[in-house]
Length: 392
Image (tube, rainbow, N blue to C red; front, side, top):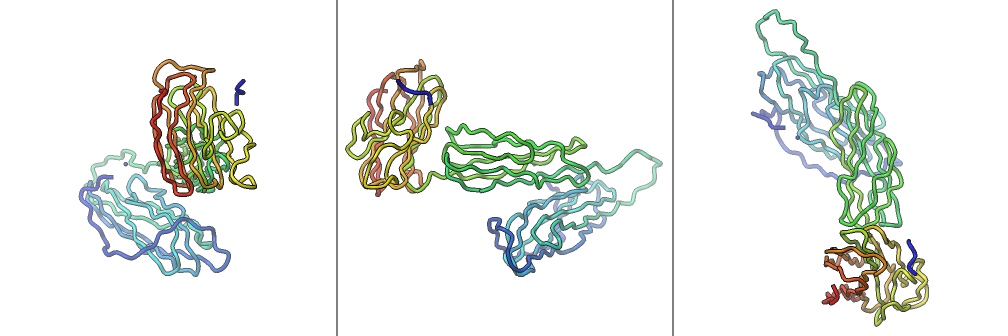
């Protein structure tokens, strides 16, 4: 018995020009020696008088002038978002003596405006560098209108990451981090995390929590993107922040199975070189859940293990071998007769070798107790031969 198991600028007049070489790299850990140092010029951005309805861009230079890598983790307009905006924030790491340029835009309403550009970095002296943004009012006749023209409150800023940024699917977990988010003129009262995208077949949900969501274990190899928005005590919601997690398939032989409709139990089988179904040369739910099969030579690194087995849902199921022995392995899918879905049920098999996807196929299987051969995989070459099937 089987056991359950969105800025249009019209026109744009740039106050500066030129292009400087820059090198952006992934964020690194804070240096253990020396000091990173940030320098932004100009130190104050004054757009002067700009006619109402026009937009003006000013180019700023950000330079790494310390002795260690400068990490820029966030760049946002805080106060003054109603008038000032960033064309594209510069986020990343800068080695000493490198620089880049970015643009702040002023969208004139004809009134005087003040704002603040805020840059978060690992410069110990300026971890939250503020660059004042100014614009002057257009002279207009005094009509005696005393209507309220106050500047709206600013939005909070969502700052997000995932730690670590790469994990081994099924076996390792990551944490979604949003606790460095901030509000320039208030407090954050809500952190909203969702999975913006995930690989086909994945079922792992975003963990519960507040600013940080810990213990996310991906169940399918591929890219997972988390989205964070935060809300402040004034009811303003931030622009979304995105963080990307890469779930790898390890360095050996890795086989994934998932299907479309629940209520139909599909089982993954992996046959050893020259193996036979439902014997010790076949890794499947009855004998392979805890890696009890002895394939290849001595040790366990060349033995298969069924990491995931699913009955009521749509998968995924997974079989992997850390260091597969030389030979040809065959992948089957069994439509287990203990449960049945009436109608088409598309079944997908992914095969990875050495961390790379080498074969994938999706087929309809709706024949109870069918053993459908999908593919033969040769190790170590990675050559694949698609099987014709025959009992779909």
